[in-house]
Every structure is written in structure tokens, then in C-alpha cells.
Length: 130
Image (tube, rainbow, N blue to C red; front, side, top):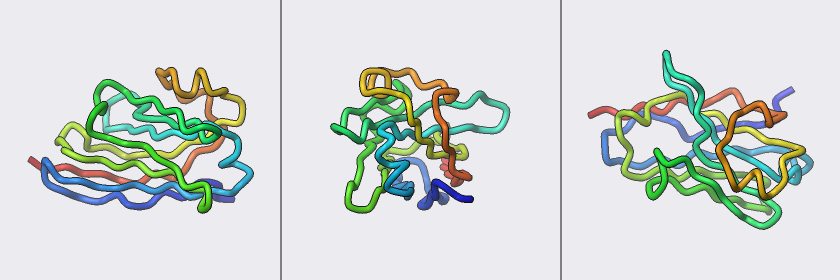
């Protein structure tokens, strides 16, 4: 049973933009902490950004701060990741995740390790060429 559905990945040139979407059920969305992770071949999974859906507090990894923006749509139970000024090193599979137990302080405080998250999407590929 698919709980989180990502979309919006693709191939762009360096400097370009993409917007990822993660749609889920109302129940999971209200679980409060939703995040984006990425994993490139041969590299460890990295927590990129998170949002506490209860009040919109966010967290960003240093590697994406100032370039990526995470946002939410309460009406659609959807979380977005707007990615601007993309770099070749942003190339990875991007995963959406949701946590039922991670409170606002930890959700927006970072860093994100993944083990705190209960639900995962199947991933969407982002490829940035130089």
C-alpha cells in the first residue's frame, strides 16, 4: 500500500530548477513531520529538508540552505520541495518521508537521520548535468 507518492523529478542543467511533490493521506500528513531525503550512488542518505506541518517550522541541511524551499499545502495534504540553482552534486534519488512521533522541536531542529521516520515514498530521480 503506497502511503507517500512523489513526483516532479527529472533532468535539468546546472542552475536550473525543479519542484518535487509528495502527496499523502490526511492521517499521515497530520502526523506532523514530513521531510525530504536524498541518496546518490555510493553515498549515504542525507536529510535535505523537513517541515513540521502543525506550524510550518522548517529545517534545511547546510548543503541546500538558500537554494531549496520546503512548503506545504494543508488542503492537498502535500509537501513540496522547490529546488533552485541546482548543482551536479544535487543529483540523487529523492525520497519523501513522514514521522508520526517526531515533535516540532526535533523536526525543525535537524539533522535528520531517517530512523525517526515511519513512512517512505518510492523516490523520484533528480539528475543535474553540468
